[in-house]
Length: 113
Image (cartoon, rainbow, N blue to C red):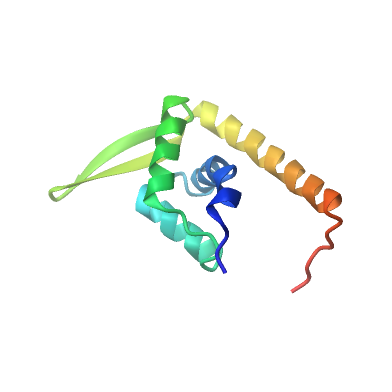
């Protein structure tokens, strides 16, 4: 089961910021594969969703881009700026609080696997 794009839309920036917090520097395809791996294929980020998010984070000064040439190919690596590091902490706290609120609002019980 994969989650709907509507559920992911509001969390994609937070997901990217967390990935970069944990991995320091990544390129786009690497991010999509890492999310699939970490979520056991439940979350699949498309390039059409990821790259506009990365561009927005760059425009906001939250990520830095380094270009490397691998043979004839160009690869863009993304990493957090100092502002991005602070924003990542803020966004993670916000999302955690939101999830806790939704659990309470919907009267959900934690699922024990």
